[in-house]
Length: 211
Image 1 (cartoon, helix red, strand yellow):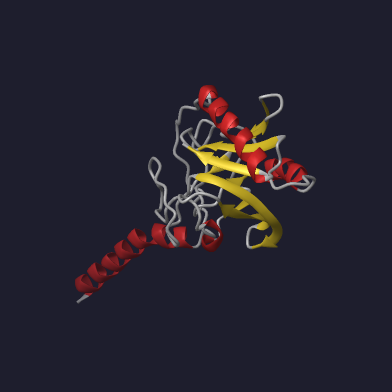
Image 2 (tube, rainbow, N blue to C red):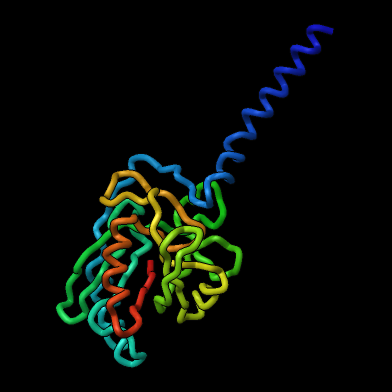
Protein backbone atom coordinates (compact mmCIF):
# COMPACT_ATOMS: atom_id res chain seq x y z
CA UNK A 1 0.00 0.00 0.00
CA UNK A 2 2.81 2.40 0.90
CA UNK A 3 4.61 1.63 -2.40
CA UNK A 4 1.40 2.30 -4.36
CA UNK A 5 0.97 5.64 -2.57
CA UNK A 6 4.53 6.68 -3.40
CA UNK A 7 4.04 5.75 -7.06
CA UNK A 8 0.80 7.77 -7.18
CA UNK A 9 2.54 10.84 -5.70
CA UNK A 10 5.38 10.55 -8.24
CA UNK A 11 2.89 10.30 -11.13
CA UNK A 12 0.97 13.38 -9.99
CA UNK A 13 4.21 15.35 -9.66
CA UNK A 14 5.27 14.41 -13.21
CA UNK A 15 1.91 15.53 -14.63
CA UNK A 16 2.12 18.86 -12.78
CA UNK A 17 5.65 19.59 -14.06
CA UNK A 18 4.73 18.75 -17.67
CA UNK A 19 1.64 21.02 -17.60
CA UNK A 20 3.07 24.09 -15.83
CA UNK A 21 5.02 25.74 -18.70
CA UNK A 22 1.93 25.82 -20.91
CA UNK A 23 -0.21 27.22 -18.10
CA UNK A 24 2.39 29.89 -17.35
CA UNK A 25 2.36 30.99 -21.00
CA UNK A 26 -1.40 31.55 -21.09
CA UNK A 27 -1.03 33.84 -18.06
CA UNK A 28 1.58 35.99 -19.81
CA UNK A 29 -0.87 38.75 -20.88
CA UNK A 30 -0.81 37.58 -24.52
CA UNK A 31 2.88 38.48 -24.92
CA UNK A 32 5.39 35.65 -24.86
CA UNK A 33 8.62 36.93 -23.31
CA UNK A 34 10.63 33.90 -24.37
CA UNK A 35 13.60 34.77 -26.58
CA UNK A 36 15.61 32.69 -29.00
CA UNK A 37 19.33 32.99 -28.36
CA UNK A 38 22.09 33.71 -30.84
CA UNK A 39 20.07 35.31 -33.64
CA UNK A 40 22.22 37.10 -36.20
CA UNK A 41 21.14 40.72 -36.66
CA UNK A 42 20.80 41.57 -40.36
CA UNK A 43 20.83 44.95 -42.06
CA UNK A 44 17.69 46.16 -43.82
CA UNK A 45 17.41 45.83 -47.58
CA UNK A 46 18.02 49.42 -48.66
CA UNK A 47 17.00 48.62 -52.23
CA UNK A 48 13.68 47.21 -51.04
CA UNK A 49 13.21 50.20 -48.76
CA UNK A 50 13.79 52.62 -51.64
CA UNK A 51 11.26 50.75 -53.79
CA UNK A 52 8.66 50.98 -51.04
CA UNK A 53 9.44 54.68 -50.60
CA UNK A 54 8.83 55.39 -54.30
CA UNK A 55 5.50 53.57 -54.14
CA UNK A 56 4.62 55.37 -50.90
CA UNK A 57 5.23 58.77 -52.51
CA UNK A 58 2.59 58.03 -55.14
CA UNK A 59 0.18 56.48 -52.66
CA UNK A 60 0.33 59.28 -50.08
CA UNK A 61 -0.12 61.94 -52.77
CA UNK A 62 -3.13 60.17 -54.29
CA UNK A 63 -4.85 59.25 -51.01
CA UNK A 64 -4.30 62.42 -48.96
CA UNK A 65 -1.79 61.00 -46.49
CA UNK A 66 1.19 62.71 -44.87
CA UNK A 67 3.61 63.13 -47.78
CA UNK A 68 6.64 63.87 -45.65
CA UNK A 69 6.92 61.02 -43.16
CA UNK A 70 5.88 57.36 -43.42
CA UNK A 71 6.55 54.26 -41.33
CA UNK A 72 7.97 51.06 -42.81
CA UNK A 73 8.35 47.66 -41.11
CA UNK A 74 10.45 44.95 -42.79
CA UNK A 75 9.25 41.76 -41.11
CA UNK A 76 11.79 39.60 -42.92
CA UNK A 77 14.53 40.87 -40.61
CA UNK A 78 15.35 39.29 -37.26
CA UNK A 79 13.16 40.69 -34.50
CA UNK A 80 16.25 41.67 -32.50
CA UNK A 81 17.26 44.03 -35.33
CA UNK A 82 15.94 47.51 -36.00
CA UNK A 83 13.24 46.86 -38.58
CA UNK A 84 10.74 49.68 -37.92
CA UNK A 85 11.81 52.72 -39.95
CA UNK A 86 10.58 56.30 -39.69
CA UNK A 87 11.25 57.45 -43.23
CA UNK A 88 11.54 60.95 -44.72
CA UNK A 89 10.03 60.83 -48.21
CA UNK A 90 11.33 64.27 -49.13
CA UNK A 91 14.96 63.51 -48.30
CA UNK A 92 14.78 59.76 -49.06
CA UNK A 93 16.38 58.92 -45.75
CA UNK A 94 15.74 57.03 -42.52
CA UNK A 95 15.04 59.46 -39.68
CA UNK A 96 14.83 56.93 -36.84
CA UNK A 97 14.59 53.16 -36.45
CA UNK A 98 13.57 50.74 -33.73
CA UNK A 99 12.54 47.23 -32.80
CA UNK A 100 9.08 45.80 -33.37
CA UNK A 101 7.46 42.48 -32.49
CA UNK A 102 5.56 40.24 -34.91
CA UNK A 103 2.58 37.96 -34.33
CA UNK A 104 3.03 34.48 -32.89
CA UNK A 105 -0.20 33.14 -34.48
CA UNK A 106 -1.19 31.99 -30.98
CA UNK A 107 1.67 29.51 -30.83
CA UNK A 108 3.91 29.26 -27.76
CA UNK A 109 6.77 30.38 -29.98
CA UNK A 110 6.42 30.93 -33.74
CA UNK A 111 9.47 29.78 -35.65
CA UNK A 112 10.05 31.79 -38.83
CA UNK A 113 7.18 33.91 -40.14
CA UNK A 114 3.55 33.26 -40.93
CA UNK A 115 1.02 35.89 -41.96
CA UNK A 116 -2.76 35.95 -41.88
CA UNK A 117 -5.68 38.34 -42.18
CA UNK A 118 -8.13 35.95 -40.50
CA UNK A 119 -9.94 37.14 -37.39
CA UNK A 120 -8.59 35.24 -34.40
CA UNK A 121 -5.37 34.12 -36.13
CA UNK A 122 -2.96 36.08 -33.89
CA UNK A 123 -0.67 36.58 -36.89
CA UNK A 124 0.88 39.67 -38.44
CA UNK A 125 -0.84 40.96 -41.59
CA UNK A 126 1.27 42.42 -44.38
CA UNK A 127 0.15 45.53 -46.23
CA UNK A 128 -0.52 49.25 -45.92
CA UNK A 129 -2.29 50.70 -42.88
CA UNK A 130 -3.78 54.06 -42.03
CA UNK A 131 -2.87 54.97 -38.47
CA UNK A 132 -6.10 55.96 -36.79
CA UNK A 133 -7.20 57.51 -33.53
CA UNK A 134 -5.23 57.04 -30.31
CA UNK A 135 -6.83 55.54 -27.23
CA UNK A 136 -5.78 54.10 -23.88
CA UNK A 137 -6.65 50.44 -23.52
CA UNK A 138 -5.33 47.07 -22.42
CA UNK A 139 -1.83 47.86 -23.67
CA UNK A 140 -1.79 51.49 -22.58
CA UNK A 141 -1.53 54.28 -25.13
CA UNK A 142 -2.30 52.74 -28.53
CA UNK A 143 -3.32 53.63 -32.08
CA UNK A 144 -6.11 51.96 -34.02
CA UNK A 145 -5.01 50.59 -37.39
CA UNK A 146 -7.08 50.44 -40.56
CA UNK A 147 -5.88 47.90 -43.13
CA UNK A 148 -5.94 49.25 -46.68
CA UNK A 149 -5.19 46.07 -48.63
CA UNK A 150 -6.95 42.74 -49.10
CA UNK A 151 -4.13 41.18 -47.04
CA UNK A 152 -4.90 43.27 -43.92
CA UNK A 153 -8.40 44.72 -44.25
CA UNK A 154 -9.58 42.86 -41.13
CA UNK A 155 -7.08 44.67 -38.90
CA UNK A 156 -9.65 46.89 -37.20
CA UNK A 157 -11.99 43.97 -36.52
CA UNK A 158 -9.05 41.94 -35.21
CA UNK A 159 -8.10 44.79 -32.84
CA UNK A 160 -4.63 44.90 -34.37
CA UNK A 161 -3.19 48.14 -32.99
CA UNK A 162 0.11 49.99 -32.74
CA UNK A 163 1.28 50.07 -29.14
CA UNK A 164 4.29 49.83 -26.85
CA UNK A 165 5.32 47.09 -24.44
CA UNK A 166 8.20 46.75 -21.99
CA UNK A 167 9.17 43.34 -23.43
CA UNK A 168 10.51 45.14 -26.54
CA UNK A 169 14.05 46.48 -25.91
CA UNK A 170 15.03 50.04 -26.75
CA UNK A 171 18.14 48.97 -28.70
CA UNK A 172 19.16 46.07 -30.95
CA UNK A 173 20.02 42.74 -29.36
CA UNK A 174 21.54 39.48 -30.62
CA UNK A 175 18.47 37.50 -29.51
CA UNK A 176 14.90 37.55 -30.75
CA UNK A 177 12.45 39.68 -28.81
CA UNK A 178 8.95 38.87 -27.56
CA UNK A 179 6.12 38.05 -29.95
CA UNK A 180 2.66 39.62 -30.05
CA UNK A 181 -0.74 38.36 -31.13
CA UNK A 182 -0.54 40.27 -34.41
CA UNK A 183 0.04 43.83 -33.23
CA UNK A 184 3.13 45.76 -34.38
CA UNK A 185 4.44 46.25 -30.83
CA UNK A 186 7.35 48.62 -30.16
CA UNK A 187 9.37 49.70 -27.13
CA UNK A 188 7.91 52.38 -24.84
CA UNK A 189 10.65 54.83 -25.83
CA UNK A 190 10.18 54.31 -29.57
CA UNK A 191 6.42 54.74 -29.17
CA UNK A 192 7.10 58.24 -27.86
CA UNK A 193 8.99 59.06 -31.08
CA UNK A 194 6.09 57.75 -33.17
CA UNK A 195 3.60 59.62 -31.01
CA UNK A 196 5.36 62.94 -31.62
CA UNK A 197 4.94 62.47 -35.38
CA UNK A 198 1.44 60.98 -35.49
CA UNK A 199 -0.14 63.45 -33.07
CA UNK A 200 1.25 66.53 -34.82
CA UNK A 201 0.45 65.41 -38.36
CA UNK A 202 -2.47 67.20 -40.03
CA UNK A 203 -2.93 64.20 -42.35
CA UNK A 204 -3.05 60.46 -41.60
CA UNK A 205 0.31 58.68 -41.43
CA UNK A 206 0.96 55.59 -43.55
CA UNK A 207 2.33 52.42 -41.95
CA UNK A 208 3.50 49.79 -44.43
CA UNK A 209 4.40 46.30 -43.24
CA UNK A 210 6.22 44.09 -45.74
CA UNK A 211 8.58 41.14 -45.73
